[in-house]
Length: 56
Image: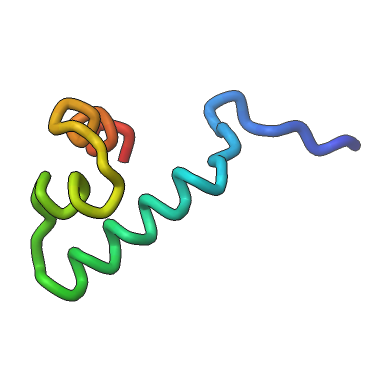
C-alpha cells in the first residue's frame, strides 16, 4: 500500500516555518505578539501581518 498525502495537508516552506518559529518565540518571551514585532523583524505590512495570522 502506498502512502498518499492527506488532501488538506500542504508542505510548509522554510520561510514560513521560520516566521512561525519567530512568532512562537515572541509569544513565549513577551506573552503577546504585535504588528510592530513582525514589521520590524520581517519588514512586512500590517495587512500582511493579518494574512499571516489567518493562516495559523
